[in-house]
Length: 327
Image 1 (cartoon, one colour):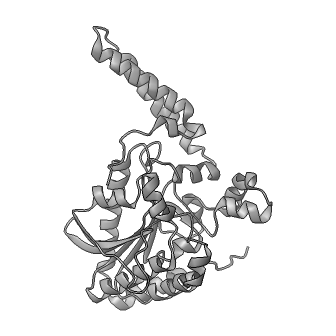
Image 2: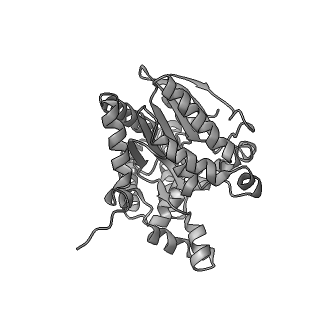
Image 3: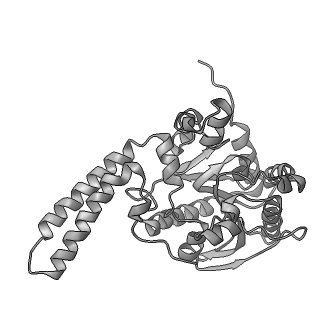
């Protein structure tokens, strides 16, 4: 497991980040010159760093929904495996669905963090090309969702809370997956997660696409990282259906209301977890630490609730979604 880079890969930068990356290159060059010569450039470096902070804040405050989708897909953004490595004190992976096989697009395991034990379930995308192919780019098959539910039932038996990390463009739509019951596996997970007699947290850390996200997305608390997205369909898929053209993806992203602020306003998520300045890909460790703190806070709140109240609140939470508002 490779540790996420502390700095973004400038060659992988997004279009709107190019001025920021150019400024960062200048700062790095001055630092190198400052340390390798008799020149005193500290004051100039500090001025450029302050300028970079201001520009970064301005750029990210004005991102369009489509630009936020691209931030959610950034190659340096921390993945579920990074959270396992940097956030947890201990982790034991649990594999297989006991029916067909082990789907690497879904990671499940017993975790310990800050003295708290829980079951972790998350989409796994992979970092290298080989890993991404093995993990099917985070698009899970039905055996992945069956694995997730089987481990959740195990957590219920052991009275362990459940934490899920959502990061997928959607469930795998291939013929084999449909033949093995893709839609049924996702629907069963959604139904059975309402009945689990332990606290459940769900956090969107990157992409939250369609039923692939919902298959592990029923939670007593649902959070999103600031630059993640959560939607019934990807912008490209929506554009292909409505306009028959992928070029309309930016318009689709705007119409879908898929950003964290939109979903918080609509009452579909409970909290937006702020990312470090410039996005989680610029400071993976900082982003992971914020998620860790939120998880521990929520677990403390939920474990204090009587079981009957926990299940009733979970049901009411999702039952309220989609209620029409008049006037």
